[in-house]
Every structure is written in C-alpha cells, then in structure tokens.
Image 1 (cartoon, rainbow over the protein chains, first blue to last red):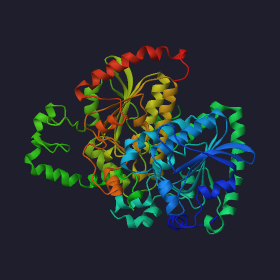
Image 2: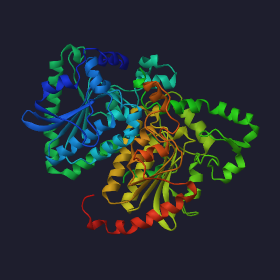
Image 3: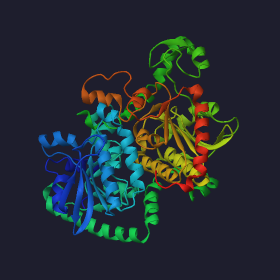
Image 4: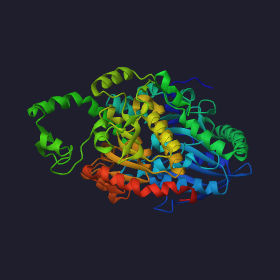
Length: 280
Length: 298
C-alpha cells in the first residue's frame, strides 16, 4: 500500500474522477432496488438506500452519495444529509433486521448538513437516534468509508461490527477545513490541519477505530474504479461470511462485541485503585 | 464554501476560550462584578439580583450557566452525592500540541479534573445516578474523560437498576482529541441503549449550551427531555448556518423554545421548579421500573 501523507490523500479523494457510491453500487451489487423516503417527512437524495444482492446474498445497502456533477449535487446536496436521510437509513436498517439481512453502509460525506431546516427537523436527534439504534441492531453491519468520513454525519452510518476504509479515505471529528478555521481562523490551511489531525486509515487503525484497510487501484480509485470495486467486493465477501456465521452462533455475543468495539476507544489516566471499575 | 465548517460550534468555543481573558477585562470595565449583562436580552441588572434569582436573568428569564457543583447543590439531597471516577485525567490521544498545558491551566483555574462530574445521589430520598457537565471547562467539550465517565455512570446505573439524570452542556466534540472524541458519541449512546433496554428511566436536562456532538448523542436520547428556559440547543453552529444561507437567523433560533416548538424537547422547566419536577417524574416511574419484567416491546 502506498505511503502518502494525509494531505496527499486528501488530494486523491477530492479528485474529480473519484468514484462515488453511485459508481460502486452497480459494480459491487446485483439487482439493486432503491427504496425511498423516511415515512415521516420526505426523501433525502444525500442518502441512497435499498435492497440488493451481493453474490447471491440479499443485503441492505445504505450509502451517502456525493454528486459527480452539478445536477447530481443539487439532488444529493453535495453529499450532506438532512435528518430525513438518517431516518431513512434507520428505517432501512430496521427492515434489514426484520428480514435478517446484513447492512452495508457506504460512508462518504463532509458532514451532516448545517441549515435551518436541518435544525428544525432535529439533525442532532436524528444522528443520536441512529447511533443508539445501530448499536443494538440484530443483524451484521459493515461500514466502509469511501472518501470522506466527516464527523457525526459519518458516524450516523458507522456504528458497525466492522469498519473498513479505502486506502486513501479519511475519517475525522470535523472536516480539515473546519479544523483549520478554528485553529488558525484560516480555512485555507486545511492541508496543514489534515496532516496533524490523524485522519488516515493507518492512523485510525492505530487508534482502534478502523478495522480494515481496503486497497485502491494504483494511484487512487479514480485510476481504475472497476478494480477498486473488486477490492471492495473481496473485502465484503470475506467479512460478510465471517460475521454472518458469528451472528448465527451467538447474537447477544455479537451485539456485545459491537458495543465493546466502541467502548474501548478513549485515552485517559487514573490512579490504580479505580482501575477495578474499568473491568466491569 | 462554508458547507464544510461542520461542528463549528467548536469554533465558537475556541473563540470564546481565546476571548475569555478579554472577557474578564471587559467585565471589570463594568464596575467590578456589580452588574450582570444578559447575553440574550442584553439588559443589565445588578449582579446581586441576578445571583439571588439563581443566575437567571430577572428581565427575560434566560437561565445562565451554573458550575457543576452549583447544579448539584440545587438538585440533589444535601450530602448525598458520591462522586464516581473523581481522579480520572485526560491523556493526549493524538499528541495535540499544547493540550496537556491547557488542561493543567484549566484544572487550576476551575478546580475540576475535566468537564463532567458523575456520581450517585439522592433526590428526595430516591437513588439516582447523576451526570453534570460544566461549561467552564473547555466549554464542556466531550473528549475521552467526559465520554468514559458518562459511559461508566450509565453502565453503573444499568447494573444497579437506577435512573439516570443528565444535565447536559457542551460545545460539542473535543477537537484536540480528534476522532477519539467522535467515538465518545458512540460510547455514550451505546450505554444509553443498554440502560434503555433494561427498562430504566433516563431524564436528560438540557442546559446552556447543549450543542454539536452532545446534542447528536446522549443528550437527545432521554426518555424525557427537559430544557431550561432560553438556553441554546442545537447541532450546528449558528454562524455556520448563517454562512450557508447568507442571512441572519432570528434570535430564538436554536433556543429551548425553538426545540420545544419543533418537537425535540418535552418540556421547559424553570430552574427553581426543576428539582420538584424531577422528583415527581421519578415517583411516576417507580412502579414502571419495578414491573418492567412484564412488558415486551415499547
């Protein structure tokens, strides 16, 4: 795998020809039937979801979609979901649980949309609800970060049994641009920010956030989307099989395992005597 | 494009931290702490009157920020608070420059170890687990210590079958801990999920300001969500939204009242009635908690 700095990877994921979820879905899945709407308010174009077949196995696919041109971007709001997008995702995840199919989330967003309507419809609540409900969803969940995993807007689709990232993808608490504008009041220094934020797949494996890194085509996914799609497929195949088996053997154990995956993230110090509690 | 300035509540926090010293100077320009200028209605009242009113603006009823200790004093039975994890200190997970020094400075200044106090307490004799965030410490941003203490407190409540009362206040995720701070949202919400599945009561009380990653996690997940009057509650920073839509937002945008109107808060309760309201709600949920074995589904 290539050795690049975080900001070199940022350039790769910002490449105009970077494949989006809409490119990958037909390459990875057969018979994708898109399902629309959250049944509460409307349908959000920033999150596309539906039922598909993955090598003969029915799966639910939920994907954040970045546009490839202006028209697509108008429909998908530059990949920034509104609350109804997250609520649609949750509805489809519940449906997957009912029919015992695995959920595959493709994450690619700068973050949840920040706007008046998003606030009115409870952006915070929508994200919180997804995080909580995905935590106990009784079916396997795999999340793959395709490009940008920005903040709570990404986390809402990334509470999962296994988190994978494409080789050049980044996942961060705030976009590098936001980080730069906070630290130096200068959003144009995002590249610098990107390098100190620890956002690459390798950083995140070290921080116990990311479980697997998926190789991209030489020089970045845009050079060969089909090849990259195959790498993603291979990963899904392998991971689905092992997760499906484990879920069939012990559902509670798998739900506990998911909880603990997140439970262990954090660094702090405490005097030895209270260490006892940590073992609870 | 401003679109990418997500979580920039955090930026406001940074700015307000940076300006904290200036702020103190400005305050001394107004005759030394004699007056309180309300950030909501901008009216000036005597500090004494403001304090006597429980740090509530006598003019517009804005419920100003309390320290965690002040909150405990007016909420739980005297002497009943037993703190959990009092000695936990933060580390520096992404080796953020200057983070340790900043923490030391704040510890000395606030007497807190981090931005949350958790523990067991009683309200009118009823046992609860209580979580109180303190905005004086890095605007109560959620890093590892805040996330871990809250998660443990909720886990303890689940194990001992106790209700949880959380007083939330936060600028959002703690940027200095990078992605690790984002994961605290998952941790705390996961703990709420388990407490919820055990059929136990969780009351979230949103105080000034409840924003960003805390709004987008455990704060919004209470069985009952209470807010104090006029406090700020929201997900994204006001300035980011103003930048996006290029127009000024109305004053009551992202207030407790705005959240009530839009259906994200159950009730707005005055500070002086809060303890009583919580006590009554605890009583109403007592039998339900005892009978929970009988119920299936929600």
